[in-house]
Image (cartoon, rainbow, N blue to C red):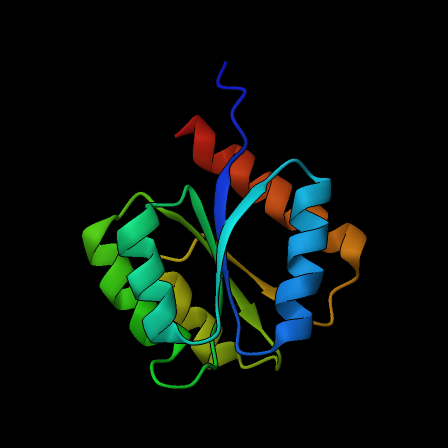
Length: 128
């Protein structure tokens, strides 16, 4: 079994959300290799670092999470992407899943539930 920590990029325009996700994911054994503050940075970091998993906000400046997801999924259709959403913007979440996101997390989700979603999504992804 691969014991390496999943290499993770967190993309969100809100620094406190990036910090929260970093703390939560590190506590679960994920390695945070980079953080992006907008969609373009997320794409650039993805290209440079080739992460195992990407947590990305839907609403970001310069390039939205959906625009970045479209670019990234074309390059790596097997990438595990979990979208972050501040509003229950059902339409955007559905769009993200259609494009190729594995799951989504609302930012107001309790930490125990965030851990559960990330863990289940990652486990399902690694079994593929």
